[in-house]
Amino acid sequence: MRSEPTPFLGGPLDGRVLPVLLGMTGRPPKEYRVPVPGPDGSTAEEHVYRLEARAHTPRLGLVRGWRYVYDPDPAPRQGPRWPWSRPPGASPPGGAGVDGDPTDGPAAGADRDDHGERGGPRRDEG
Image (cartoon, rainbow, N blue to C red; front, side, top):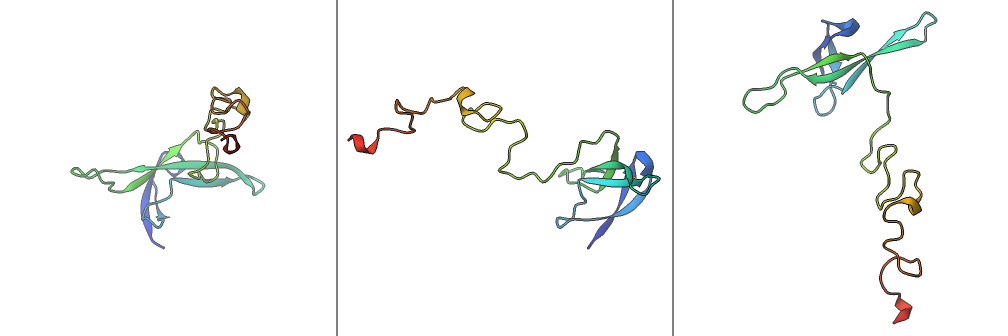
């Protein structure tokens, strides 16, 4: 795999340039986590560095290198984001409520007929 010497700013790695493995697209990971061992050997804390562009080309604005900047208050680690998943707490399409109950949304029953079924006329009604 290919690696690139990447500078680190702030935190315990301030001023160091470390080789960081690049992904398939030639870009380093979005965040770099450095575990700090505790006295008993377990991970006591973790220093987090966020990726940002080091410089841009003047004409096209292309990225001309990367650097990691220390993040003193990191967000909690999350799993992968899939395109079909919603953020936590978001209501599903169709106006259902926050707790998922379709009866408390703004459009509850708006697309149903008198018999409680969706759509237009029934097939057996002519």
